[in-house]
Length: 493
Ligand SMILES: [Ca+2]
Ligand SMILES: [Ca+2]
Image (tube, rainbow, N blue to C red; front, side, top):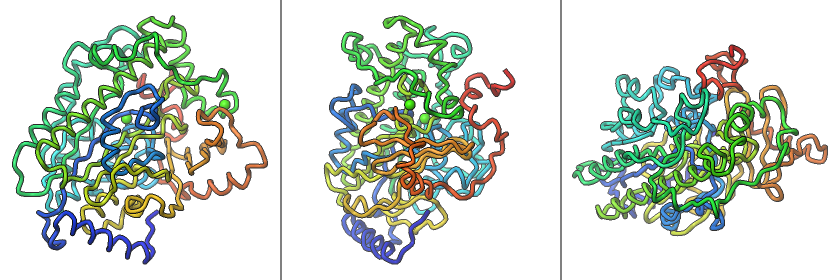
């Protein structure tokens, strides 16, 4: 997927030289003059925030404050709507069809033992690399450090995660045995540990440029916040997502299974009265508050960066690894190829390069973060990754951008998002097409209407031609979400 035209190389060379002048690089060898990097990852935050629209219910003043400093991509999409494949793609620059990391249970470090991760590449190029919280997906962090360390220093949130899983009793059955819980948390919320560690790390002197990564776990399940934040979203004025009954009547079995309505909505939240602690309303209220809490954590990180005096020499990248459904599309999970599970906040601030308050409306992918950061920091080009540098769009948001965003869930299921359309093709050949000009909640599947045949044909060309095998049983790929919850595939139930 790399665009390697001579025109682009010329543009990049000029752009990097320009950025280096601005941030004071005497030459490419002088690594100490390179800009610092602050990478902020948020977990499961969708687009129902005031960052995207002031009429949205979730208050994100700190994301807006960050967007005002640089470029906000208002059509940015995850690579995959699950933590592990999404983050592996961002941090290796490689698409799931290249790595075989399709699901949350795939061991990414085992599957791509030689991949040089983004922080690792910065370490190799003279940076001091530190991180905290959820950057990679849980599980392989230790394996990564032991075999091929990504960070020189890392504060893992896992040891402190267990106390968060004391359930409020809002869920029943299998869900109650997992992290599926929501509401007020009266203990120290895990993200405070992460932010405090990063704040301390920012205070320490460094003789090298810094690459600092902060992984905020909220609004990920359990949807927790403190009482004050929770009270900002009262039932009286609670905004619920748009909902269309029988919305899934026009999609295939694979799509319906990804939405997992029967397992979650019907059995649990949808059957409870509005103010019941386990109702859909409380679920949505808690998600809104947990997202607000994540925004507050971002605010603390920005305050600290500003206080260190390093903001003018620090490139900031903020993203959420994917979105979330809140009852819309008859779903209360991620794991689907629809807009709400795929559309994410994504902001790039490169002092002296991006222009304050810029909005880019081209469809871009989080896969593009790796090559973009390499370009922005003047590191040697990395030609063996799949993403595409966003430097042209950062330089001029009106530049021509001829590529839609590609999303993948499991193997063989893909969505292609252009400025106007979302086209989905599942592994059994079933298709969906949505027109975002008239249908923002993706209610009407237009795929069977012959008048859209050419639109479909055009979008289909962006689906990967080859995909490495999935090492787990591919026949179970679409039920993967259920496997997450009860640890065994549905046909063994
Ligand atoms: Ca996630
Ligand atoms: Ca529908």
